[in-house]
Length: 256
Image (cartoon, rainbow, N blue to C red):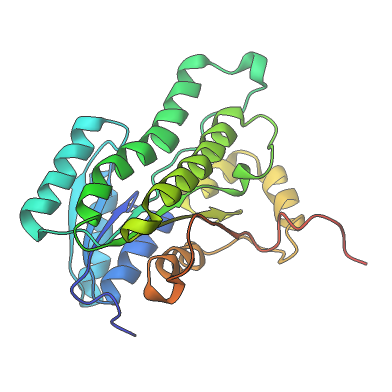
């Protein structure tokens, strides 16, 4: 595997499972010094064990990404230990409940916004000063819900539309300062979170997969590959974009 991240320092949030875990492992395999952050210490331990088994090393940090003090402390630790940051992947997220807007619990709405949107703002707020030292990249995880209106998921859709807006503002503010900022929009991805939700409603899961032209969900690594590409020199002229990786889910239309 190409070692195009040799001597690079990479932060991956939401690295305890799913897309974040796969991205952390990919960055490490390609030579990066990876800081893997998540709220779940057991998940982080499993990610670290997988990296070790593959002959790579990564550091872990149990962090609530919606809390400014914890994000500030994490970036201070990276500055202290590594002296730099070259790439950040802000990937932590939750779906929240499924309710019509008039029935949506306000506390649940706030929690989803905090984890999915506030965390991206806080991440970039503290990542950008370190990235400015030598230039680098930020990739934020949005969703196909950033370009659609999935019924019952007002908090999730609002948070992911917000991620796209934050990404574009950050890209505009930093493009001339050597920092590229982009987002990915995964479709149906077989992460533990999605698998658990599917088990609660298997009929909906089957219907959703049939609506995908590729007729399957994504493996988390397929999404992680897109994030790593946006973090690499191969995408050097890509700024402020939302890369949709969804098996064709948002194409629209129908088969002939």
